[in-house]
Image 1 (cartoon, rainbow, N blue to C red):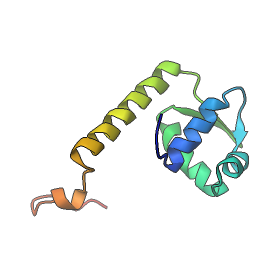
Image 2: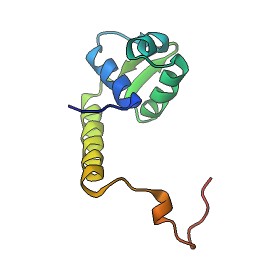
Image 3: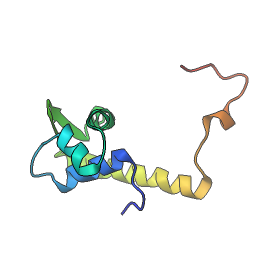
Image 4: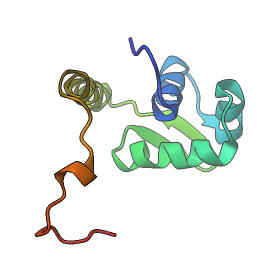
Length: 102
């Protein structure tokens, strides 16, 4: 699987491996050695993509396995591209004609 996992990967894998129930952010944080507030922030983005479910105060992995598999394949594809070609750095791609994004 993933050799080094970022906090989001760790949280999603935790929820996936423990999909028999929903979890409080504090419990996820304790199990992964993260801050509770960080877990809620970390899981908010996958929630927007319908990869996790949230009914305060509980978090759970989606039951849409097709969506989860597709997101994992997409993630692995980009991870492989980063390894092969190097990570993109916006500053290196910036031109004078680009609009400033805030």
